[in-house]
Image (cartoon, rainbow, N blue to C red; front, side):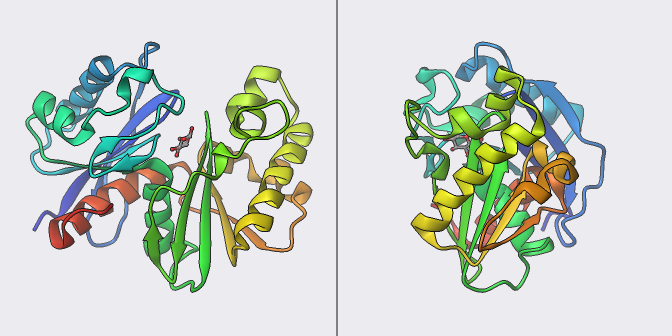
Length: 254
Ligand code: BGC
């Protein structure tokens, strides 16, 4: 049994890691962040993973949130990464480069795990959806506390956009220099679609944007209850670490 687990959250702009207490879900260290290599290619990103594992002088299994569809450790969609990721067994690649055992799952699923175990989602029944807002729009769905892996609500096409995340994510806000007011209208529209399509009982908003919650909360007008992920941007790291523990007990996640 490992007391401290290394959780890593891979995003479009940064790759972040920290040691997490396996029982309480608390972060035991500061977050260590390395910018995501511009190429967003497998080998370069694997080197950053090694750098993070080495930084913590860590021995043990690693849990890792990854920004694409992940099935049995394999990357199944290009998302915002380099297309050469598709078909790569991420578990195997990271294990080969670092010598550590890896559990890899979708990043928003990982963030959702943290909220469902230690945050606002704890004990919540029905359909709870964690939305992470960053370079893309991620979604983690839980029904009566059980993960429904690889929900991809940010991939819904919208007007001229191939996927709505290209219009309503933080990445879009930055690219287009939108004020929070203007961006929040887009984000609200996205959440309205989510409401129409899957009728959630609770929406939890996480990812980098949760730090700016006060700037846009009043602009969200939905029938569903919407709350901020109070673990904020740390949820992805904590959830990844915890998922790795679960895997040790129950076998593969998805
Ligand atoms: C990907 C998702 C991911 C989200 C957040 C999207 O582009 O398709 O798998 O969860 O970005 O990183």
